[in-house]
Length: 428
Image (cartoon, rainbow, N blue to C red; front, side, top):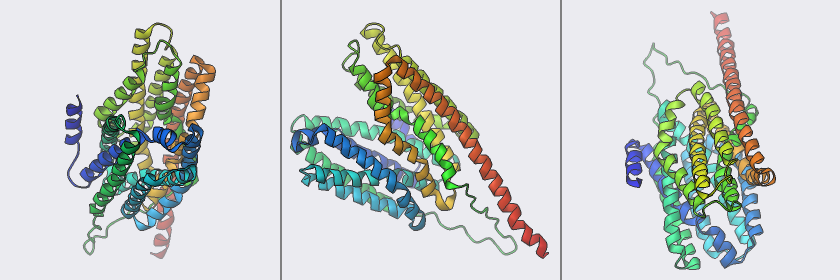
């Protein structure tokens, strides 16, 4: 199965910059899988930090990333996405290598905050770089192949780490962390190989090229869409927090069920993420895809309402169905979000607009785990039902907000066109 998935993904990778980006996605997430598979255990058992100190550090790092993402993206709009990303990768490499000398909470907090900033800034800038290299369907497909590859890389890294950490936690984690740091040195060097697209050839005399000017809709009008994107992206919080906690509290749930859920999610995403982009080739299609994604995520949540009503076999079947529905909704939402965020980002400020679009996901990382956990643990099956309603409303709101912003963009473009045509007419 894994070889089949790898073959399918490799066939989707065109030569050139796309291949470099996909290989980077594989190497970077493999290194991250090495690190994240054992970081909490290392910090608590070896360094001696409490669980609350680790949780507090991660929360503060999320807030730091939320604050810093926009200024870094604005800087990248001026100096270029590629050099900014190279610098961020080198910062990540240095910080991961610096973990080798961390022995207290202060050092941990400083490093985890810098990593949080670099991580949050890197994602929108990677998306912006893809947008600057490819157009239309090619850019969304490239993002999809990268996401599928990231799932393969993260899983491979986690499995490799498990084998190493069972032998020696302290030495093993330090070796894995060093390998993770070096993986970002590699990705930085590969990014540097990508050459910016050549400037358009000057049009022949007498045939002036008509260039459509960039049209911006007020940046902060996008905050509502960003928040709704954060609501839909709660699927990650459900997968990694709510669902494992719910299974842990259910005596009928098989102990290995969390691993089965993660395996289902990884395999379906690696095999099918590119396929889902066929439903998001235009903005109207992507807007409807967001509605469908909300419905699939709601169906997954409603399925979880019935987990625990019978024995282990029925529980395993229901959880597996919920995991499939969750993954389908997640993949469709990702494809829709890429197309819409690209369409709404002006070319001369793409980095900052994509960073703004990602603020909702950053807020999810900070508030989502506590909110979803409280909802499910306090209200049980009714909490899952409320979560399902939230996904439906989030999908519908995402579509409505997208169409409103597209309409504002159209009006702004017409106003700009007619406004710039008036002086020419009067001068004739």
